[in-house]
Length: 250
Ligand SMILES: [Fe+2]
Image 1 (cartoon, rainbow, N blue to C red):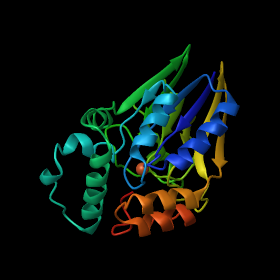
Image 2: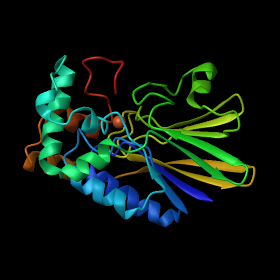
Image 3: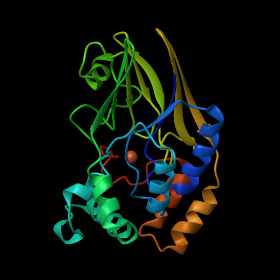
Image 4: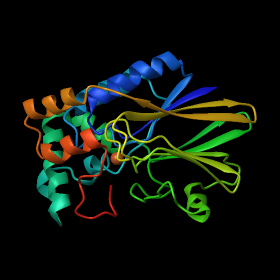
């Protein structure tokens, strides 16, 4: 069984298209999506169409997708700080492009998924069980990594959210973060996703990095007058977190 794991496209359809081209050459049996389809990038509709074209086994809700169920209207959102105000501007931009049905679908995706083949079990989350926003860094302690699953029989945990790809072992369990397709923050500006091969008790993981036309997505953002282009432009070029009013949030 070959599984492709993708996450955090964040409205970057150019990066998503490049990942899909690479992914098709890997011939996965199934694709799973771990959330944050939209927000921060200029192409929410394209990302939704590209996701649908993959017919994923599951699509999980991210903290950015969750805004579409949290706020039925932009007027309901009273920003608490500068970062919140930026997210509200992104929300308004996305709402202009996505239909009401599409917004509802994005905002009501499931928040977890359990994947089973035979005796093998994996748990999938955007950030962690019971939270769409918890941060677990690549250098987390084994105890912190051990909080990323609910069931003892789970052998593999897949999550996204932090935009830093990594593979770790914690208490006999494999923890894989596939990184971000649209907005990596780990210093490598190529799109990131993961291919996982599961054969009986054997498992192998790959983190794949795919180059794409960064200048093209920036041009699309400018052509569409996307708000807050500067932090997006710097983030996609340098693969750094530029939304930093508060380092504790991604
Ligand atoms: Fe994200």
